[in-house]
Image (cartoon, rainbow, N blue to C red; front, side, top):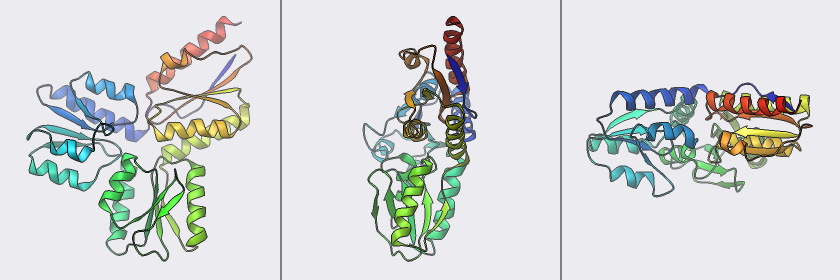
Length: 294
């Protein structure tokens, strides 16, 4: 059995910053009531590190985050996730004297900032994203007249006046998703221009995986990441689209449920919200299996 790791792996820079900020604050302020607004990053194991320090997670699946935020006691502390948030959340926190820790990814913030500047001049903007994703929801809330192309349904919801639209995209989309969306939009608006698309970490991991599949012809792909992580799911989808049996596993426990043969050539990669430690733990396990077969 051969194991090939796809580089880069482990947290991307944005997740490193978000986790460092949140963990450091929680450790330094054990006496405070701290609430995490949604998943800090899309990885249950990573969020568990915070809950073990007493941080309360406000799960968007249970109720809208806006309602949960309004229901918090005055004077507590709120951590904003790396996926960004509507600016109205900051207004509510100010009114309720809630201290905020903002871990928004720099790429998400940059997309948001550039689009806001454009929006002040024109509604001729289309946002490409996945409906329901925190990053997309935050963008749409702050730019209510922006048209939205949903990559899931492949439909365009037109709100503002479109002529030669500027295109902005969710940073964690797959390359094929973004290309399909742009092609569909260009068929109706040939003068459309993509201003900001996927972040560097997303692009780099997807391109490295495609290159590794072409080079090594694996029989199996293991993607370490959460089923809630868009960028992790895209890696698994890339593997399947290239004819490789692909498994999306959160951690070592889930990898141990898989079966392998000594003829397998296994590619191991990770989403941007999976830690380096989790990756190396799985690599050691797979290597021990390989050694036992010799």
